[in-house]
Length: 134
Image (cartoon, rainbow, N blue to C red; front, side):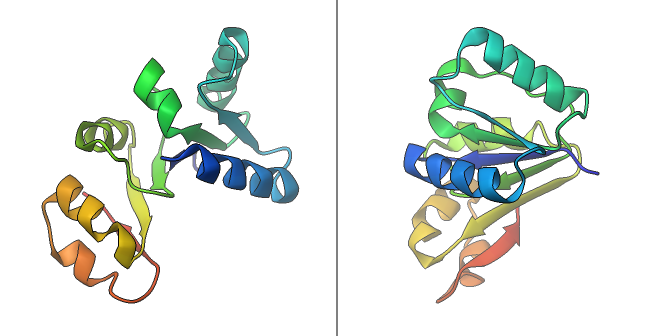
């Protein structure tokens, strides 16, 4: 089992994913956002690090305000690309193995700003694709 961090830049996407995970994997995920209390945040991070749960959903606003380094992260999945470029590099730095982003043609300007590569955007012409980010 891999420890997967899912990053949702907007709070609305965070709520959508949290609802989906609650319905499909109620016992295997944790969710942290800027409204999560300190003790609950610490317990969630500990459970993820100790591999008691394998999915951690994180909101972009939580990362912007708290900047916790989440240990034990093997994979990072960007549901929506971060708005601020340095968040992208910091979050990718937590992953030991795999970094992926779910992008569509509307995310093209964000991906170019983050990666500096137009090749990643050419893959996303016309449909939603998953790309491996470096």
